[in-house]
Length: 482
Image (cartoon, rainbow, N blue to C red):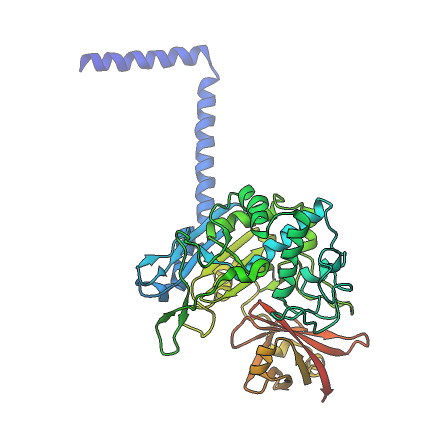
């Protein structure tokens, strides 16, 4: 005890001596103490300002709730990743990758990307342009001389789905190049052949060598049905009476440059980071890909090179979906917020089941993280559209597009207005559409099918661009006015 007291006394003497040798020391110590209190007060103020805002954990719990129907080990689901400014905010798998073996989905599960493949194909074409090996306005026949109808059709037309080619039927042309948007897998298959012709590599080798390996996407590649692929998710269909069935076997490599790729959400985050940071193509080249194509009549299509370009609840959105047997997928990027969400699902889009499609899930996830920055859900009501403008849309429209779609809907749409609300009728249904802007409307039924009314040279409404599920676009030309 005595020795302890002596030690304490010696320490007090040492401090007094140090203070005499440095008279400002006490003042500096006081200032340090005051500064510490100020900092603590500031931190407390900041914490108070943030009070009430959900934590990242709480936001993740809200995402988890979207997949509640996939919990329990008896349903397929998918995987999700959310990133902002290079930071992963949420990354998780939901439901089963394989129901028969009880294997869960994880961030490393491999899913078919389907049409998201198109943005990889577009990036490869732009890499070849940067290398001086092709030009976007070159005719298709410069590279594929055997292709019919190719003289007036350019590489740019293929990239923007404005070549006039049908969705699936090769060599069939529905419209002149640049006349209208006509979503076409055939066009992107032709781009794959151009990549091979110009680069000297197979499409698969080009993707691996020039995109996947540089970005560290080791769990991505071309999907071959006969190849054993570790951590491959199995695809499922919803049964009409409930439950699930194995999706039909399909070799996705037949879709080639239009839909043959598989990936994981982890790899897709590397893709988004690499593309938007200028690692894949130059930033100025990327701007071309993210600029909507302009048709011959001057109208914009809402599609660039492998990306749909538009707005969601007031925020600029770059996106693309994918639809394959037993799978559906979606990537959405909000450039002004540097925010990306990727949803990969091992459940078919049709028939509908308990789990919403990937596009709807992706946007609901964006709502969770960016909701404070967004316009109110649903956008404008029909009553807020100028009544004269609304009335100018009324009439019958001749629908053109995929034969399989027209077989269901018929080839005539009728636009009507009742009590300030806009309705669209085909041969089966009448659906209300809510206004987003004076010209753009969204289906109240599914919240993702959109209409955009376009004007002709005379300033009158001449046609409608109809986007279905963010995957394809149909056109309807006005027949009569009322």
